Amino acid sequence: MPIRSKFLPLPLLLGLAGAVQATEECATVVQCNQVGSVAYQDGRHEQAIEAFERQLRRVENGDTAQLELALNNLILANLRAGQAGMARAWLGVALANNLSGSSTRLHLRKVAEALDYPVLSASPVGRYLRYGGQAVWSELQISEDGNGGYHASFSPVRAGARVEEYGPAAIGELDGKLVGDGVQMRLEDAGLGSDCAVQLLREGIELRVQEVFADSCQDYGGMGISVAGEYIKVDR
Image (cartoon, rainbow, N blue to C red; front, side, top):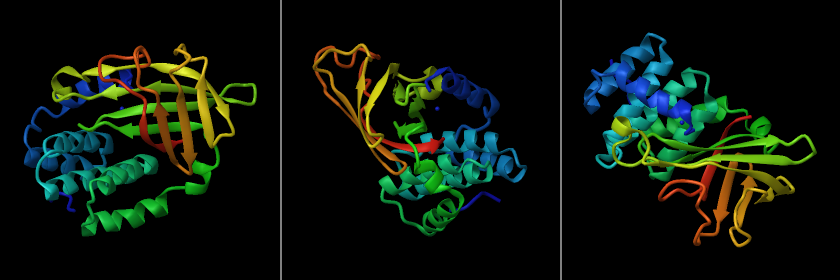
């Protein structure tokens, strides 16, 4: 019975290719829901997540009820896979789309129970994701630099319309030192021009990145690439 209701890294590229090969029978919304549901019930959570991501790509710009079903499938599959942070990230996508059906409300409680919020929010260190559509995420990794400070490594992605066939339309890479108190920080030593400021503002598990858009300030990636936006922490 169907369930009711990523950096770019090379692993994401390989994951997308593997998903296509592993779920060739998943070509329509209904098929993807069925394939994912069977995998979920068999305890094959990673395969279920792949199928539900394909389901999401087929409804993301369409029917709201189908969108909510696909997102709730992803929330539940990630919870069962022990990935509470990832489940919270998918819940954030649902809430950003103003979805508030019974399954979304139920999973809001389940995610809150599963997520160790105090531990996850205690330090800037960890893995953050920013949703880019088409079940593709840009990544930010913040680590300790060994000198009492922090280092940031961005892997921004622009999905494009045919990510399953060809991979992302554009990717980028930006690394540098973070200067600040762990709540308000700025990126330095990243190879950017003096006028190309990048600032990070952290509150709990949420993080906002602001950057200057100007000539040469986005030379760290392909066309349309940026690190600006809203991120959510999914792992320590």
